[in-house]
Length: 314
Ligand SMILES: NC(=O)C1=CN([C@@H]2O[C@H](COP(=O)(O)OP(=O)(O)OC[C@H]3O[C@@H](n4cnc5c(N)ncnc54)[C@H](OP(=O)(O)O)[C@@H]3O)[C@@H](O)[C@H]2O)C=CC1
Ligand SMILES: CC(C)(CO)C(=O)C(=O)O
Image (cartoon, rainbow, N blue to C red; front, side, top):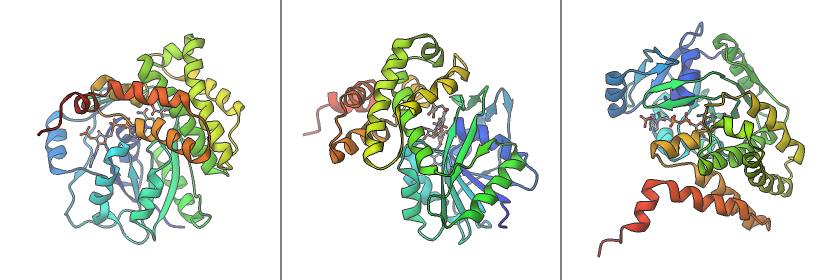
């Protein structure tokens, strides 16, 4: 079996630092966190903390000769993925396995297009409640990673990743139908991330308020309708299945999209409502709820508001 020793992680944010902390101390793992020069300087100056403890992640910049990674883990936001893919090429060999923990349904395709010969596993992270403020990441629940091979060609890569996650103490599952799992997570993000951003609501609000949960579910149901047209077997029970996960989240925890809105960062709305609207048009599924959320979320995002207000230069 292929064994994962060298792991290159790109994106030391809420997700990356949380899982990175585990990988850093895993027996037999050589973790390399890939950053550009400017980030390296910033991170060395500020330090990176996980649950209040400073962690000295080994920072690598592109352009240095390194042994190829056995596993590349992408943990950036979707808007930064293209740059991250470009940066990582020095760390890639013919046997490098890729995994993306990004939300949405597009990242694996982008990675596979850039590295057509490599194994790209599909993955989602479920029930993690990581929050990042500056370079401080906190979580109370690391949740689990659900991953698998959608091509039927990389069973060995799946086994190798199970083994490294066992060594790192990262909980995981390998469902039979990973694409269904990815769409289930997409449905969740379209619901809770977007509703939380518009309502400015941490998980506690959704735990208490049936109205907040209904906003979330209305958006999710449009994903169910689209998934069914695409032959992905999502159903109303899948919408309800999220309740148990939601109830176990820290009440003060926040979705990644609410964190972005509060920090004034761009959001992943194009990957959530934007995708739902496009797919709805292609498949003849009405998506009024996501259309509303799309515009409401974009109205929060400073750089997009600015573009609308500042007239183009003559
Ligand atoms: N937070 C959560 O609970 C969950 C998030 N997700 C998904 O995981 C993905 C990551 O989210 P999250 O961790 O919250 O995001 P964050 O914004 O916290 O982290 C992303 C990190 O990527 C870094 N980055 C961006 N571009 C580069 C680059 N070119 N090279 C190196 N580092 C780079 C950023 O650095 P810098 O800060 O220096 O700009 C940032 O710290 C998203 O798709 C999100 O939807 C999935 C499940 C749960
Ligand atoms: C499911 C949820 C809401 C937390 O893991 C998430 O994926 C996010 O915050 O982006």
